[in-house]
Length: 520
View 1 (tube, helix red, strand yellow):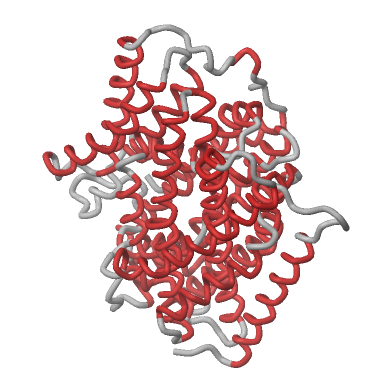
View 2 (view 1 turned 90 degrees about the vertical axis):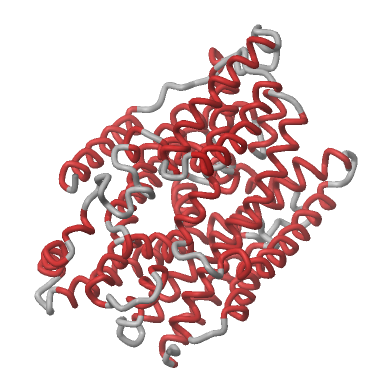
């Protein structure tokens, strides 16, 4: 299948407009050259609305839209827990984590680890994150994005990946984080509008033209098993979403690691004008997360009725897009590509930030700011090239890419959460305890995966987290057991939030209670 001339025109106009806006916001005053703060942290100038939009645009990409829709097709509404539980996770990050990070004035998450522990911990985690971002996140976004383009426009997979990589480079390589964050405002608007339109048309088709409400009722009647938020043990997908663990177990660890300690997510909050602006942006993103399942999960469930013959779950979203009328398909296609290139730009900017600021600058201490920015741009290009080359071998045979990503990152996230949480809130944590938690997380996860294969990976994440906490505490007590000089002084941190933030937090909690009560 190929796009019509009208659809292609809509997409091309969108792409050109995006590049034009990116170049406009990236322009510099005469005589001023971008330094590392400008390129990697947008000069600490981002307002709340840009932060909130950019957080979601960075998060919602091909592995979310294509992958989560595929999981919606295979599992059902239960996969929305990743979105809805993330909303309350964001509130926690804004209140308790962001004040610490901004007070420390950091560029990267590994930089905080060096401030709190030592350079050894910083280096190990920097190398780990570079590997995950290039060989897991970038490859997943490129592969699934190319799959969507192939299904909708008939473009060969390799050319689709090259196009996406070049598109993200064109609008982000010069401007850095500011270009990414400011264009994300356009991206998220197009993404939400296009996604809501797709869901509307799918439900209207299921309702035989009687409207979306009738379509939704019909959908719940035809596939009631797809509307269980908490899966029972006899559900064939219990291993992916093990019952109450989505509320009280390992999903908390996955979410805290992703939203609180993940460089390419947290970086836009580090670029906030102020703590209050960052917190308002996070609250805005939390409300957007509540909306996301309508955009990314519902079309996948609708595909069970509209296209039950699909060979693979990850074909659900692209297949639903084929139902769009001429012109509208171009808009929805633009929305999908918007999400993909936004995440690619965010990831490559974070990869270049970590490599340049955490590794390269340590060995090349006296170079100019212009030199570091140039290195960052080169690293962005190299990382995209590697991801294009490795995408097919790594993801070509994956049934549900979203679940693949969660399973892989689940080997490391327990240890990451332990060393950050203890590093922020327990003064006795030291570098040795951090290394034990980081390495123990991977080793314990491997051992449990093969010795206890029937244990759901989310439960494994929770169990490994508890074991890593024990190991880290014991190690810290054995190797000194005293408060560290570089520990975070919580008395200097402003944890008190404005009443508007508190109202937003209460609203998010109430909405989540209502949602889980309705679909329990």
